[in-house]
Length: 421
Ligand code: SF4
Image (cartoon, rainbow, N blue to C red):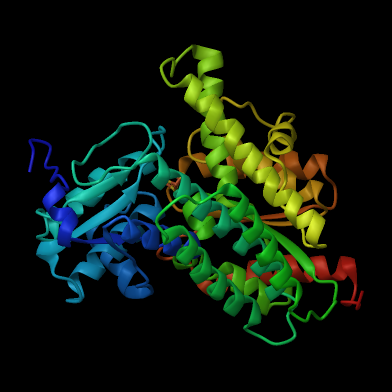
C-alpha cells in the first residue's frame, strides 16, 4: 500500500486474482469481462442487485455523494461480504474518465469504503485512457483496445435492435434470447487469438441485423420513449429499476443512444479543449485520429442497419453535435455535459416526442444541464413531453412509475389506439 492508501495490482496478482466489474451496461460489460479473460485475467461482471446493494452502499458512502457512487460501492462491498470470493485474491475494476465530475473521484471513495469495511488490502484497478493511475499487472495493448472497441460496438448494436424488437415481439423472450446468443457468439469471435479483420466485424453486424429480422413482430404503433440522462443511471438496470423493461411492459418502445455516443463526446470534448485552450498538445494527433475512427465505425453500423432493415439506426455523431448548438455551449462538459441536451433533441429530431430524463440524486451536471434546459427544449418544440425522474435510495418506485404512466397516458391520447401498420 502506498502513502495515499493505494494497493497496486501487480503482475503476480494477474495470475490468480478475480477481478470484479460493477454493472452498468450488462451486455457491453459481459463482453469486456470475457475479453479480459481471453487476455489472461479472471474477470467477472457483478450481477448482485436489490435492497442489500443499496443499503450496503449507504453504509459506506456519505449520503451527499451522487447515487451512482452509492450503488457502485454497495455492489462491490456486498459482493465481498457474500462469501463467494476469496477476498485475499480479489481485485476491483473501475473506469475513470479523467473529467471534472465526481466519477473521476469514485476510486478514492471506493478505497475509503474498502478500508472502512476491513478490505483495505484489496487493489482497485482503474481503466482510464488519460494516465490517471497505472498498475504493473494491468496493461492495455493496441490489439486489446481494438477488441474492446468492437465489444462496445457490438453491445450498442444489440442494445439498439433488442429494444426495438422486444417492444413488438409476438413470442415473449425472443429478442433477449437472440441478444444472449449473439453476445456469446461475439465473445467467441473477440476471444479468438490471431488477426481479426474489420471486414469480419462488419459481416457480423449484418448477420445480427438479419437474425433480428426473423423475429415475428406485432406491427402495432407504440409510443416511443427516449431515455436520456447521466450515463450510469441511464444504462444500469440496478440504478434505473429496469426502466427499459418497465416501459415495454407498459406498452411503449424505449429508445436510447449507445455507448459510442458517450465515447465520441469524450474524445470530441478533448479535441475542442485543444482548439480552445491548446491543452492535450501531446495527444492531439491521437485524439483526432481516434475521433475519425469512432465516427467511421459508427457510420458503418448506421449504413448496415439502413441497408439491411427498417430498424431505427443511431444518429451520426456530427448531427448530434449540430443539434445541441442552439441550446448549449460545447464548453459545458462536466458529466454528460452538452450531450444530455443533444440526446434530448436527437430523440425529437427522430420523431420521439416523449422523453424520460434519468436524474441521479446528488448529480450537479444533470441538475444544471438536464433540468436546466427542459423549459427551453419544451418551448422550442411544442408537443414534446419531457419528464425528469429522480433516482436515489429513498425514491419511491411507485412515484417514479406513476410519473412514467402519466407521460405514457398523455402520449397514447395523442397517437390514439395502437393501430396495426
Ligand atoms: S455525472 Fe453526476 S451522477 Fe455521474 S458521476 Fe458525475 S456527479 Fe455523479
